[in-house]
Image (cartoon, rainbow, N blue to C red; front, top):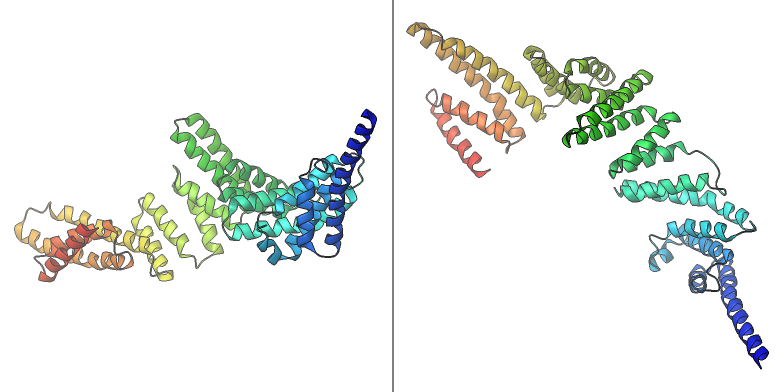
Length: 401
């Protein structure tokens, strides 16, 4: 009686096993017939069963079905809410390989991976364009993982490496971004941009170190960043990204004069780029060369009449000239000479007004511009009654900010 019970139990167990494996076979049949919805329904039922959970073939079939739905039937994918299902395809193939101890399924899986790489690449590009940078990074990393796997092409996809770097950079995964940029540099793919962006990350890390009071670490990181900047510029002297990073580094640092040669190189490459002339104006102001700065700001405004910063800075240069001249007037002791010089100074102050009025047109709510105009109007109010009215209007604007 015990033997009969055992035989019955075994039969029931094997029957359950065959039933579940039968579902996998049926799913395969529906898959080959293009009936993907039915195929998915059956494989989803079978693969969770204890009799199939360790069967390599089930995972291969699930991967094939899900991949086919992703590639062939967007309507069905949406209907079945499978928008995030692509990673499960590769997970299924990996699980199949793990369970396939006799290596029977590798060729079948390898046949799927060429298209799967394209799928993940396209998904990554779509994520990136949608500013979903973390998802883009994950998809590009999966492409690299597939290619490097035993069933992959073993191809080193330089474009994907660089795209992974940029995606990681944009989602603030700076350590990963740095590693991918270094890899791109070693493969000489978009190396100019990679040098520049790697240096950009390192300089941010330097700032973070300084902000936490770790000046030693900050200096070490800065040395590494500068090394990449200079090495990159030596290799790619005409790379725009590299030039911009060098300009920013020196212009905002302790040695602004060193930015001039990089600004000149950038201007030579892009003589119509107003931003470069504005940056050179900023440099000359830092170097206390207002005449040269004025020339650069005027050039900027020729190229871009709506450049607020150049307009404002140009006004400040004119105003500073008048202020310095006013100081000398105040030293005059002869009354008649003083009155004549003071009248001329008032005319000079008046000549400055249009610079800041134009700046205020470009940026009506800028507090610094309005404050300067207020002071000019107040100073000139006895010269012309219109300035009193302008002063009152400007005060009202400032009070409403």
